[in-house]
Image 1: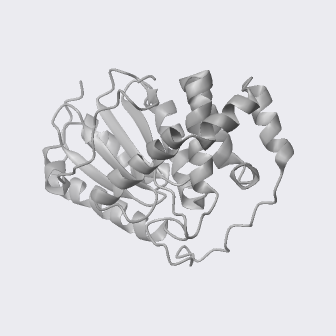
Image 2: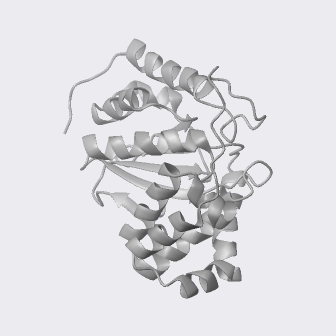
Length: 247
């Protein structure tokens, strides 16, 4: 599995960044996110329920040249279930309650900033720019966490030499996780050399009954076909809610 800047920012800017992220966590939370009540706090209409579409699953597996029988065997294995549960328990022990929840780690300074909810890229960019600008004020928003920053057992997307490590705990059926998935993909496009992204599973079984099997499926696709296939499958799951529902 895979794995500069001198401009300073003043304290008011750092406070603004943290304030935007906190406000964003409130606005961009809802069913399956940092609020698990099932109500959409963004004031918009609830996400539409995806229809079951087994053909979409077949098309995905065919596009990745995945052996369906081997995949089914892997998904059913206790080792795979333990891997997904291990991610979940790590998050739970660290205080994760909903999804998406991310730690943004400045590997240069060790400063670790929590990011909650389906933050849009504009909000997330403020934090990334502040880290790359060596803002000392971000230390005021730093937290200590028991979440491991060791990535040798993870599928990693982004530069191996990146300064910023993002560890995300997410649920494949969570619509707000899908929003943040778009944010992270955009961040990697804008900052291809500065961000490394690790995705860990936090299935919310009570409201997303297909999330755990979807997590096992992408892990097994990665085991069979490699890191690129893992991330392609994960992208597809978020882009097409029918996929996890049809597994």
